[in-house]
Image (cartoon, rainbow, N blue to C red; front, side):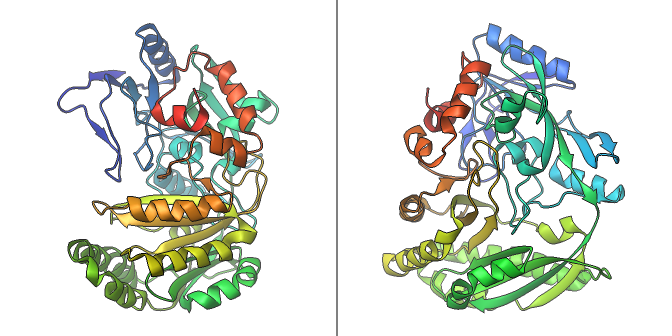
Length: 439
């Protein structure tokens, strides 16, 4: 196990560039036993412990001035169980590597988010999700997990073994211990047909319930300062496979969605008055297209333009009202918003602190490009989201505290009681967890 002290070059920054930490030391365990030993040593030294994946959270959920655990040696698939259709994977494995490995085995996750650079444990622990009428988040596909707790114990958790820990630790926020392995439900690999097309904002809202009901996976992006959206519908297909052509994929996904979009963001940041015009042009740049491919090549997209993000889950029945209020706010505010607003859905699940816990949910995500002032926009958006009992994504910018969160999560006290039992001395505490969970 490597261990490095944090000095001039020991500063850790997240992907979005809005969180900085200076840990006292970093460790890179090569086994679960080494990780447990590092946890015990940190406790002896009076240091807090946090694990960090690829830093794709926009909150300080992984930040620490104590011991920063990097899991890049805890990677790879431990086992594939075809009888039970599960795969057990080390916690530090990037989703990208998992998706590719599963595809080689003729297997796939049922659903996933649109970014696959995160580690599996980081994505699950913060509640990363995709969009789905019936299929839920990454965490909801977990069948078992392995957890190193504050006393160095290694717990195996499932519906049958330590079920109360399993109910919470699938989205554990790093507050209950350090996840070292996850067992996911998988299925034989399948094909999805994606249909992407522009659609007026008013039509999407008027037809939202129908679009949601008729498609296995529906999402859309609204371009602020316009009445335009780009919609995406993913549904299972019998085939044949018809992937996006090499040139078309490069032109739309790289040149337009990343290259030209990045240049437009630079212009908008330098001259904010140009943003509405750029938005109108951008909303018309992408044309309709359809393609059929294996799941991770449809669900996920490259994200090379760095940004900062806030996302809230509101009750699904409140999504159109919330979006109307958001659009009205942007229109009258004088704000210049250059990044599209993303809208997705998820069915209710049974995970204690899942943003979809106990209720069908719709997710509304607002973004600003890295380096652009975002607080005024996010503050105004958050006021709207919280008026609809919104639940903030644990890994994205928000200002909510334990008092608010206890009011929107019926099982909040169940989670904090479990935390009291597993980590009474708050070895895994940091400023973020102190704010969202209480002391």
